[in-house]
Amino acid sequence: MKKKHFAVLMPLLILSLFLSACGSAVPAGAWPGITYDESRGLVYLAYNQSVLALRVEDGVTQWKYPAEAQPAFQVFSAPQLSDDQQLVIGTYGNQLYKLNPDNSGNPAPNWPFNGASNRYIGSALVVGESIFAANADGHLYALNLDGQLIWPDQDNRGPLWTQPVSDGEILYIPSMDHRIYAIEMASGDPVPGWENGLDLGSAIVGQPALSEDGLLFVSTLDKSIVTVDTRNGDLLDPNFVTQGSLWSGPTLIDGQLYIGDLDGMFYAFDIRGNGEADWTLDLGSAVTGTPALFDELLYVATEAGQLFSISLDGSISEIPLLEAYQAAKYGSPVVAGDLLLIGMVNSDVILIAVDASGKVAWQYSQAQ
Image 1: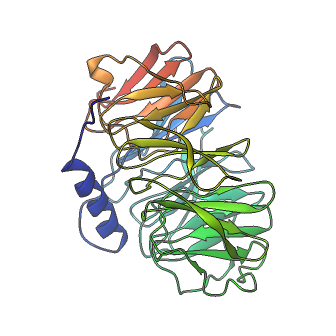
Image 2: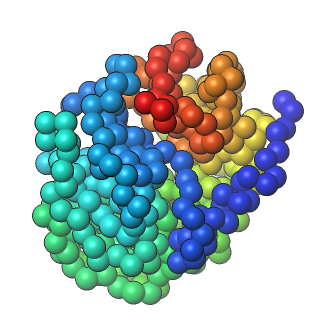
């Protein structure tokens, strides 16, 4: 497969995100955030200056928030549903909103939280009646469903770009300062032995995968997946080494890790193996999103605009897309019932819904 290099676009995108997260005046730029709400039959699309609700069966817009563009409102992370079926949305304007999606087609915020000093890049994590929002200012903001802080956070981390992971009692927080932190969900106190985090040697952008037996698999920009035993904080051998840097987190399925790198290589690793890949595929272009399991196949999108379906044993097929749908794809595909949702950038079309046959069922464009 001929490799397609985007030697200018990807470094500029990464540099823009890095500088903006660290407080630079570099303009914001990212890809669409997508969430499926099965109970309402809606898709929430967060992109640039609006969050939209689209009907899942045909993509028809149900509402838009805010109704008119506001310069301070920019959002790219996927909205999250709370236990009371409201939307939690973090913005590049340093605000976290809880939005009522059922307000007669004109959604209104229940509250904004204004305590952060930088932008929200990753989605918030909602567990029960608590909201945990990682911010580029290094803080994890823990809120109740009324938007009130439930405990003060420590102040010794680098920028947080990634949604935390939880086992229901402990929060694991990846950081751009090369460390991963563990804190008790109820109190915000560091887990004993994790007071200064665990140094993994490189920045962490993708969300880690947590196994049922307490192993945390953390991908880094230093071309490896590091295994952490959360029971004692030990770093386990071997690391799973890749050819290119890892922007996304891995998908963990039945003891296998699946992940793509920025060199366009895609891997399957046995978590009990020796660190060598069970198989690899060359997709030809950078992968920045986490693979999605849809109809028993992994779906992976690339910077070159391609979409691949990959079986769990490494068989691959490229989904043919019309030229209008071949724009760069940086985010993770999202499963929505019998459809797969894929966001795009640098295109009038910013979202497509693909069915199991590979046909585009509907699209959403910026002109709609």
